[in-house]
Image (tube, rainbow, N blue to C red; front, top):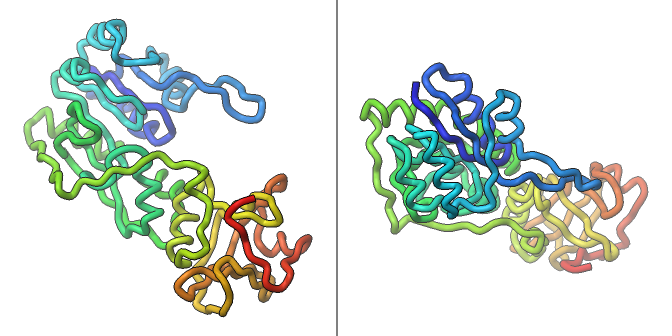
Length: 314
């Protein structure tokens, strides 16, 4: 039985950890995650999902503020792991930790590397309207997602899928891909392949600022932004000075003259003029201070005067 140290924090990493716990071939000695954080309106200090799973199985957990300290290095090295598995952990591993495990540090990354290195690769694949994404297992090195590729599992992205839905689908691919990768490293059937640096792209974390809709953009691009920022930070515009979050939409076949951001109500639905002569039909929306609801329900208590234009600031 091979010993494993697992590093991960959010929901995305849970299925992979569960697979290792369930496997008769691997023994998870230690689980490392980011520190507990306050959550919800009452700001209750809450353990991340990976830690919660580890505690249910009485696996030792460790939440260092940094991995650069001697304490962190000595703690991990004391378990003499055959593998260190990393999935959405959120910190760069120092080179001396990368050198600890017998078979190396294996990372589960939510993109088809070398595309979308860095943070939020799943969300950006949706925002950019990609037709395909996947999970890559990678042998980690000192760079940011620059290590040699081991195996890849692909997934088609439908035109209506949100980042949250793609996130869940990719997380579900991780268990089988991870076990297959680890077995392949053990028996030599998986050969690391260097990434093509000429094809490499990097993406940043999402922010609320980038989720504000520019109605001069095409309806397709805005629709992809709406999908890619659900469940966070959620695409938004402004209605009478208040934030209006938009969760779902459809690109309309029709179009009408008017300036970008101009609203038309037709058949109980909200249509918005976008750039390039396109039009978007809004689905679920949420006005600041209210709950999420369908556009039809929204219109039961509110209206848009003729020629109303959504603004990009409150």
